[in-house]
Amino acid sequence: MSTPVNGSGGTDRVLTALLAMQRQSWEQGVAAQAALDLGRHDLAVLLADAAVTRQHRDGRLGDAGGETGVVNGAACGEAVRHAAAVTGERRFAVALEAQLRWLLVGAPRAGDGTLYHLLGGREVWADTVYMVVPLLALTGHPRLAVEQVRGHRVRLHEPESGLYAARWDDERGRLTHPQHWGTGNGWVVAAIARALRLSAQWPPDVRDELAGHAREVIDACLAYRGEDGLFRDVLDDPATFREANVAQMLAYAMLTGVADGWLPPSYADTGRDLVAAADRLVDERGLVTEVCGAPEFSAPGTSGEAQAFHLMAHAALRRLP
Image 1 (cartoon, rainbow, N blue to C red):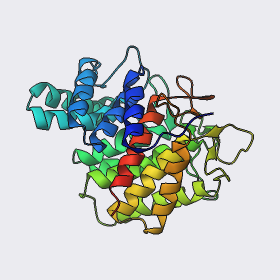
Image 2 (image 1 turned 180 degrees about the vertical axis):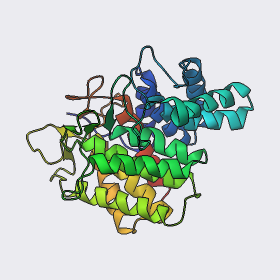
Image 3 (image 1 turned 60 degrees about the horizontal axis):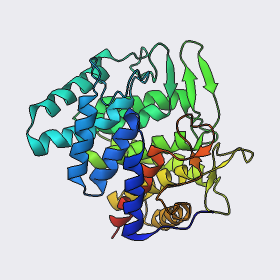
């Protein structure tokens, strides 16, 4: 049983636990984003520095050694851009340019431009939306950002349920993981929320399109919220384990949407409730428990991404009036 850890001291412990964890590239990226959201710009620069130090020669940031992800390192790009701006050190700007060149030119993709998630295959994952869409929006590529959302949406989103499936294989022309994985849907809505926050430069009607789609997916997820305020790992499969990170991801998206004006104020109360439900699962060491656990993400455990989204949800909460 976890003892609830709340208040600034609680988030400090969650941050300390996050920094103590071994992290893959995307976990480094979301950790740095959490630091930025908390106003810990000093920490964000240090995390960016480490991501640049471990940059693959093809441009992928934060390569912890032999990573097979095509897109995950792009999650580090926001912090690297920040580091370039505040330090003036050219190595950060050069590293960001290389990461963007990989996304724009070098990375494997489908004929319509939709990026594949893994090297050596033609799989499209819901996770990719978060890894690339906010960075593309932030760096002046809103058209490409929305094209990534659309490419993933046409393959993975089910209009009937409103939910995203986890993976599509272009080579086979079918879903290989049709399950409505909670955190997969969380990646999508968090990506759109962050992209809309980071950039105001969208083609006509695109902002409304993205905001409307995020709201559609949020509402579809909320239909599966349990009496304990949380969700199952596969949203519509009650036999799967209870999973808290999707609550944090949805809370981050909803609270950001309310603060930025693309969701009605009524979503704020639900966002607060989701944060409170996750707070109850933070243990005395600052670990967010009962989340889809690293490194395999197939059973309950802990993860760097869950630590980061806990902090990001709390930071989003503080942005409300």
